[in-house]
Amino acid sequence: MSDSISAEQLRLFIERIERLEEEKKGIADDIKDVYAEAKSTGFDVKTMRNIVRLRKMEKHHRDEAEMLLETYKQALGI
Image 1 (tube, helix red, strand yellow):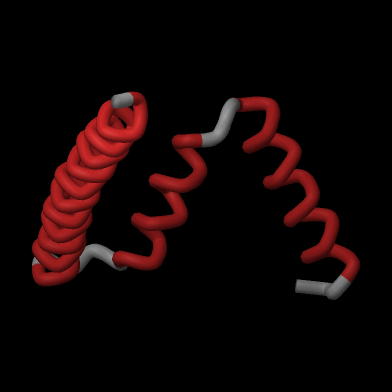
Image 2 (spheres, rainbow, N blue to C red):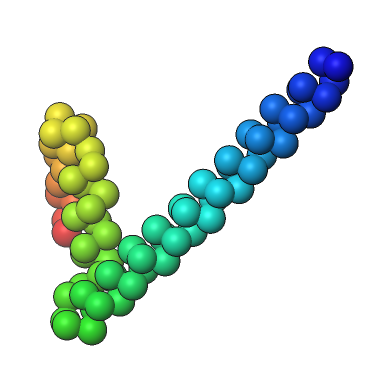
């Protein structure tokens, strides 16, 4: 009996994961559409992606990354 319960639990977990993966794909498609819309109105999508990435970071990590980038740019004379 425990085999059937474990199999049932496993099936339920797999089905939940599959539903969430489908939702994730839908959300990814929606995000892609927003970037396409922004691009069609003249925004630079690469820069927008960088801004989104930076906004996800905590301030001290963002400051550290920006300082390191500036240091590297100065070292290369950029």
